[in-house]
Length: 402
Image 1 (tube, rainbow, N blue to C red):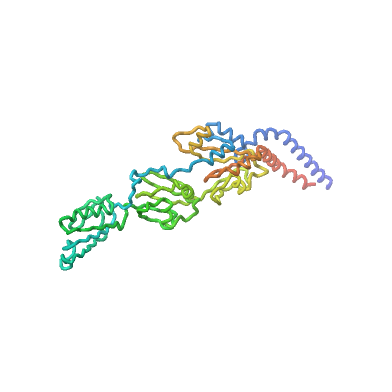
Image 2 (cartoon, one colour):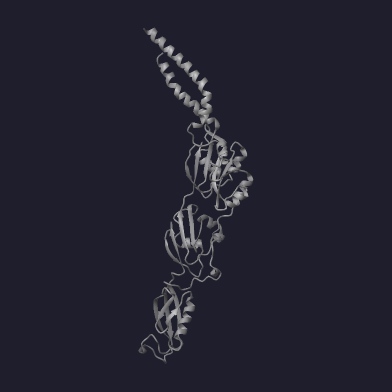
């Protein structure tokens, strides 16, 4: 009985062994040719990325592929930052004076009179005393039409006038009614010449501009500064229906971007932590934050463990990025005039030792995507593993019966 069982087990093992050889010999070529492309994968190979570029059905956004080279590094690192200084400024900014009244402002007015006063009881003044008497009018509201109402001076238009010009207008209105009146005006609540600062700042709110002519960084300091690092803080300035946007660090490092603020400006500080994303055959595909003001491609790859030895194709490390149309044109890529940004894929060959030097000078940008292509042999390896998975249970069963 035992010999019969052993005989059956031996027969089963031989059959399975022959079946395995038959499968490998008969079906392997077909599987390798037709089945590799159907296996699950983390992304395309190098040839897949490049062939998709020339296929209009796949490349619907019109991206281009550019090899990383010393000339490219020089071009990218010479890019001018987005200009806050390009935002429209009022023609009057050359002679800007924030000491001008407008609707909603409050005025404090002092009138000094000699002799009989228009505003004080006669018993409190002495024509012979030679002492000027002061009459104070606090919190005089500038109406919506830019006018004020003042006793004896009447209904006066003060919109757009400085405090000295308002004083002259009141003095002229009192002429003939008061003896040598002298007038002093203070704009105590200046809404007209104020800006709104909000977002990720310590003290959001309305900030009046002064004759000092505050600049953008001054305003940020006056509201207590941003709540986050300048590199991770985006400044958005709205003026005359125009919007300029850039990092606070960029403005601090480029004095020409630290522009004068204008009445009516709206300044928002937005916390936007800079990150780059890694996909494909990396040691650790992930979204990774910038940990300092500037991160190179070499540092970015090191953060995620670099290309994975068993899967990656080091010849095909790609950086996906939207660049300005100006850069795209200088790289000889087609540009859509209706779109300010052009999608570009930068490729670097990490099998070339020189590329390690280039990677040290390739500066990463916010929202860049790094893709490390899979090696071509990776799909064959997956296919062999799949075949082994299908055959191994039968072989194990045969061995267990021995």
